[in-house]
Length: 311
Ligand code: SF4
Ligand code: SF4
Image 1 (tube, helix red, strand yellow):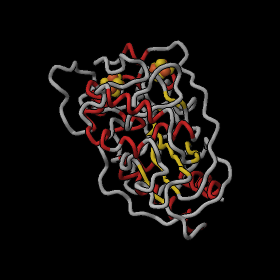
Image 2 (tube, rainbow, N blue to C red):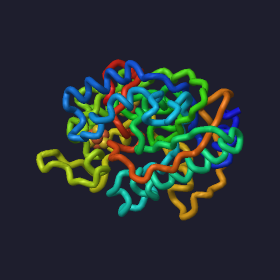
Image 3 (tube, rainbow, N blue to C red):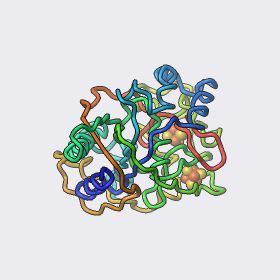
Image 4 (cartoon, rainbow, N blue to C red):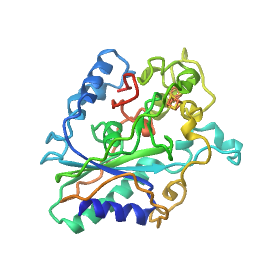
């Protein structure tokens, strides 16, 4: 039943990417996260070290009092750069051009939590979009939203990687999707194109060298770091990805208009089957943790192609 609620919500809001997964301790992702931190690749994001154990296990009661049993993942596409993109907008990475995605996502997740609680009044729910210590990308892969590419982003065959992730932890079980097979193949365009060498270890992000990470944190990159083509953020490893060629999916309208009560169209879904449910809403988080980047939030780990993933 809960999955059907999510399905209907996604269709009504025009959210093309969604899925569900069972909440379980995340392995091998947790081990990869620990290794990534131990190697000092987190670029000084100390909160990642402090919350590593939590991130590796969404079932812990520190995150949701009763412990999460199911996870809903949503992917909201943002507009890519096209030949029609005004020159003035090209200075910023594409995910920075619309409204603040944390704010938009917060509204979306509130509405979804409300729908779920209508169906199951005692449901416990906790929303996340860069704000909770969860491995969003690892969960997204398990929910069938894509595979984790060598640029460390979740890539969907139709949507590419130009979407942001968010979701809900629930205290009721949800089914997991069949993960999509990694399809980077022999490609390494993102690795070769990165202006700073932040992807020198394929599938693993050196956050200290990632221009997007510094921009997202509101800090200037270290002077010694090479500059990229963007004044704010960085899209280079997405621009060169063949899965991002063309216009991509229609962007989520809430990013580009004042009101987020946007009736959607095209809900292409990615996920879910049916399942049980529950729910009480928890207030949306007030502050977002510094994310490394959009659909590249916290270093994640997943069943990627060949290599270690970034977090
Ligand atoms: S966002 Fe830019 S700096 Fe960061 S990994 Fe991608 S290409 Fe490199
Ligand atoms: S550019 Fe190539 S290697 Fe990098 S994420 Fe895209 S398909 Fe994978």
